[in-house]
Amino acid sequence: MIILKLGGSIITEKGAESPVVNHENMNRIANEIKEAHVKDLIIVHGAGSFGHPFASQYQIGKPLKGELDIHEKKIGFSLIQSWVKKLNGIVCDSLREHGIPAVSIQPSSFIVTRNKRIETANLDLIKDYLDNGFVPVIYGDVVLDRDESIKMAVLSGDQIINYLSKHLIPKRVVLGTDVDGVYTKNPKKHSDARLIEKVTSLSELESLDSTTNIDVTGGMIGKLQELLELASLGIESEIINAGKNNLIENSLKGNKVLGTLITMKESS
Amino acid sequence: MIILKLGGSIITEKGAESPVVNHENMNRIANEIKEAHVKDLIIVHGAGSFGHPFASQYQIGKPLKGELDIHEKKIGFSLIQSWVKKLNGIVCDSLREHGIPAVSIQPSSFIVTRNKRIETANLDLIKDYLDNGFVPVIYGDVVLDRDESIKMAVLSGDQIINYLSKHLIPKRVVLGTDVDGVYTKNPKKHSDARLIEKVTSLSELESLDSTTNIDVTGGMIGKLQELLELASLGIESEIINAGKNNLIENSLKGNKVLGTLITMKESS
Image: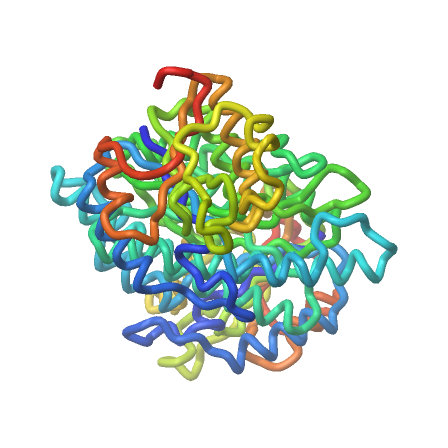
């Protein structure tokens, strides 16, 4: 089984003020996934401009400040859930139009967090869909949180990747982002930025130039924390550029492509 | 707690060849629900023209005939799931625009059937949403079926009503349809058709004129079977006309409105 992440910055116009899909990327990537013919595949996608602006506007996951704030956050929860569901529909439609039997899996229908980490999530149904030859497509969403001080939380696609991987033990985890991988510095600002081929710990990144781009692509530090935890369990992952042609396809086929490997193995 | 069903024939143009929402009805009903101020409310809606034409085209729930048929049905499953999800998004958006914190609950993310009847469905999350003041909105969908000869099934809103009611024991169940209730004959064809105020068993309907409209409104017999099972458990339900102004609102407020009561109590 392979778990493939499609970053929100790849399938949406992440900088956009309102939700805009990047149909060109989505269509190309759906075709690459089809061409890769992966037997067991789970796709996880981010929310991009369909989620982040609203999550920040409604401050979901921040401490509640009385009844009025709770009501407003619930309306925000409903709004965000609706937008990310729309994006998920577009992703599933695109995959299906390429002949892939994509099935939508809505996190807020079966996942609950406590203090923003997944507490309950029955994955049996996802396994059943895989066993029946479907491609489950799950995504960053809003969910109920059992911490009474927040009650609601944003569940990132990266945390979903972490949870699914720990419980389903995929052969590989591939993260399609809008950059080539993890850099020593922000490559958009520094011409001497260097791509890091392998990350084995966060500390090794902290020792790098503090002006790195570690945090500009929608939380690279958060992403790496999730992935390093997997690496410690022996599950390797690769961060690659899904914005470039054929990288997703080649990676899914098992070919080595440009990117950053997150692993605990010194020699891999 | 009240469970309210919005029939597919009310919120969509059910006869339409392609999916069309009845925005006028949806908007009016959302407003009536808001005005009724129900403390604990679960809404279940049908699929109407967003589901039935595709379910029939792809023969979901019919015995599988080999690999090619399975692949085609999976594509159909994906397509139907996508369309009914779109309808659910429109329903939730309309409710939210009226100030109701609607939360979408996707059956195919947590429900599995066996031989077309719900086998597994954890309702804890729905209870959690209610406890937090949300209005869960669940709907007719396609789901995995554990019967190997069909593998996939259509899950009707009426079966969901039945299952939710048996497990959550609502105070009342209200079904908003496009007719005034159950008639002795098809009222669109027979001027002497008479509305039945109370149904206590299917046999009492079978003794009626065989040209009744019992089956024309998207399976009235199926609906009644689900509701009579509830009645035998002491849970009464009412079939009312959601196409007429204020009936939903008045019924939710606990007022007696025109319709058919399904009960085992002779005197209620």
